[in-house]
Length: 328
Image (cartoon, rainbow, N blue to C red; front, side, top):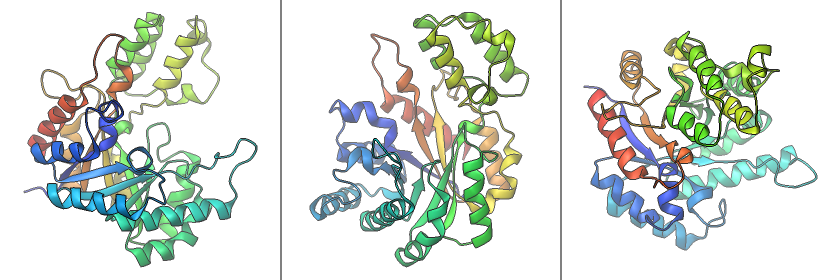
């Protein structure tokens, strides 16, 4: 029997939430109804005045959690280093923000905070004593486009390996395991005038077993540059660089530090599988490695909704949860 557990990131329901179709409590009730064990929340999205949310709001949150029986798993936080127009935050300001976030996560009952990929590594060691005191893990997100060979990610993992603390770890975004470019993205950009030749160019890269990551960082190859006709073409290429095609073995050195997974997905197919990411193979790998944490559904297909179509993240998440349950 696998010990992998299932959660949902409420980021998935952002469209329903902002349009008033689901309240915060409604999101938790939806998870309870479909038998989800845990919840992940972006407090910036769903709590006022974070990271200094008032006590009444925190009390209301805890009452919702107790009522629905959903387990708080991970609090996604941001250190907004570019908060000001004319300067970046200082190290002291970044550290103060992180400490406030740790305190709020503790008050809300979350055992872990997800550090956004661009979190400055130089504040981690100084924040660690407070994380230990509060019993809150700090886990950096390894996101597609910024995976293990990224310089900022490596700064964090170097500190993580050096300190070897149970309160430091990683949240792995499964977008680093794309075997195909999300076709909902392709349809979205084609509707805006994307050159179909570029679609084939990107799809061929994935078919070869590689990924287009380098296209988002460097000068474009001459043959691809000749295909570019518009701003839409360049935007599509930039987006394509955010889908990586790594082998699962890239996780091998890091598995002792992996605390959580974002189960990224863009489209559940009629066959009950995710179009781009081979979840069965991934879960088989995680079982083999003895992973016992959560995989949290993180739906991002809504950003590619075609004009005139309605986003139904609730249905998409339900389908992904059915898939995860069957594979686990």
